Length: 297
Image (cartoon, rainbow, N blue to C red; front, top):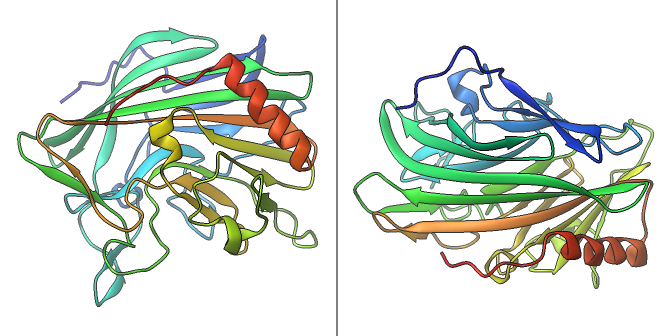
């Protein structure tokens, strides 16, 4: 298991075009029930609007932008309760933790990180995480986020979700962005794709891009390779605002010993409430800065 280096700060300031746009906390101090893991928070627009939320009252285990999986061979790397078939959400002593293991590259506008996913001293997965920024305009920038998970447990594993354990429509697990709630007097953020609008219409879709638009901010999410774009989007706006991409939407994802699963994302962070044409244009612009790379897994 990795040994923390006390001389390395717990957080890194991520910059874009010289401006601080996010803090990446790689050694969080969190209780075990939150499945401790590195996260990005706060993430800001160029105008300074915070577009993430950390440990909100409605879901204390939501940690800004992170990679969170509720079921890796029965280990909870999401936090909170575990959905058990025929029982519902249950508080179990099954939480794992993602531990920072090193920086192959650490620069102001992007990093490569090694992480260990473990439970009680047993390492299940080793992750290579890459993230970086590029400016798109005076009002928008793009975050590239890639995650490659390798099964290092020595045995076959599988990745599941509440949906695979009996809760239809709850196929969350993977890249997840918790956005902030608006003021009580404001309506929930609007969510839309190129062809559909509203939570019911876009939840579970495999759209090329998906936008979440608040009162004065917009996030535009897109898979950055063909394999990632085949994963359905997990979307919430009514109960809380959040967007993720599902690794196990309806069936468990098998991961043989030594096997690898990779996903890549582009997220545009923009000031202002954008309409469909503007969101589509930014999705196209982001692709020119972080083009698709063919991957397997």
